[in-house]
Image (cartoon, rainbow, N blue to C red; front, side, top):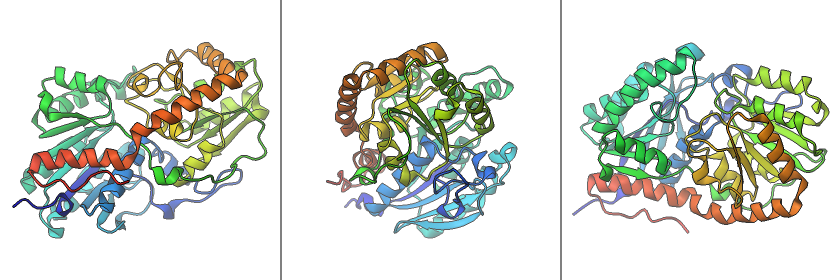
Length: 417
């Protein structure tokens, strides 16, 4: 007789996870929930952080025991509960150049995970780092269980750039990625584009599952009111990490070149914060630019609900989970035509796509969508309809089904109503 999937113990390994609420504090002019400057350098808000936390919460609600080992950002190290049966171990050093050491510091927690009960599955979440996959392979070997890998950003296929760090990640990280994925028992990717790439790398098709990031429907239920009551409409917004990959600097530049009059709200924090602040101060539209800082994920729906257009001007992107949240909020999107974004944003249906890095094209698209309320309304309706494919309860059940296939357990994790 097979045991129910809700009795599983999953060891989740991820270089980033949502920051603990206790680290949040506001600064003058910022929104409640902002982190301090040290935490900001660790890119405290992003799709992977929200993905790993949302998946953990959904599976916890269905009774799956989970042990999460992750980096500690700039907060305290230690273990804290999440939900009824999840426990999050935060480890490593709060120094950006040494952040990869979280995996070495987390090794004791990985080895002790079996004290909570036998580990049935090791689930490693790979982003732009080199440490998670070797740790995942070691953990699966130690606990004698299958290894599942979710590829949040393929360093071999998605990462772009010319700097030394990028070249190292693509060379060494790409080799580690390909080697591990070929040995993993199951691989989860966010887009069909990446699924095809990993299959071309030699991963058997029957081991690859395409399961995108999504949004938590409970966060988008009801209205939380206008977060920016003093700002004129239409409002163009950016929500995410202020990091080179996301190119928020290009958005600030494009906003300064727009012919139409609008307000720009930049919500987020990260290593490019000083650059964005400087560009905003020097912009010809500086009086209409609001830099709101970091907000906790639970407040993002209210922020999105207070905007008229969301912009994601990324240089490269596996998927961009904020896009699904924008669609859930009924927002049209203007985004780069790069990576997996076109699989989420349908040009002319849910938003507009522009060439990555083309500031003039971005400004023109923003002029078009802000000048035409009927276009915004049509794109918003398309976005809201498409968001039905991206609810986390259903997506988490699909991840659970991957575990079930590997272990031959009975399925009792149907999507919640």
